[in-house]
Amino acid sequence: MAIEPVAAIVEQLARFRGSVMVPHILLRRGLPLALAAIDLDDRAALLDLDDPGVLRARQLRPSHVATRQRRVTQPQALALYRTGASGLRWWSTFESLWTNVTLFDRATPRLRVADVRRLRPGDADVHDAAELLGIAPA
Image (cartoon, rainbow, N blue to C red; front, side):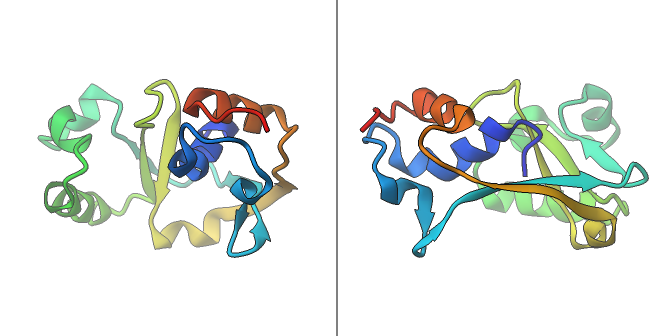
C-alpha cells in the first residue's frame, strides 16, 4: 500500500522500466489494474520507520530497515508485529518522499474501501509513474 497513488502505481509498473506503454502493461493475469483508495481507522497504530525516534526506541538502523535482504528484515518485521501495531509506515525505495504502508492481518477490521478506479494510459498518475520509470508513450 502507498499513501500517494503514483507510488502504488510505480510499484506495479516497475518491472516494465524502460519499455513502451502498451495495453498489456496495465493488465495482470488478463485483468485490468485498478487503484483502490483504502480508509484506515484512526485508531490503527502504525509504527513510522521514517521517524528516528521510533528507530532509536527499537534499536533499528536505517540501513538495516532499508535493505532488501530478507534475512535481515524478517526478524525486524516479526519483532515489530509483536508490539501489537497494526502496521508499518516507511519510505518508498523509488522515491523517499513517498510513504508506503505495510499492514498486518490484525488491521483488516479497521479497513474500508473508499473508492476503486481502473488504471488507464491517459490517467495522470499512470503518466507520472511511467515517466519516472522511463516507460515511453505508445
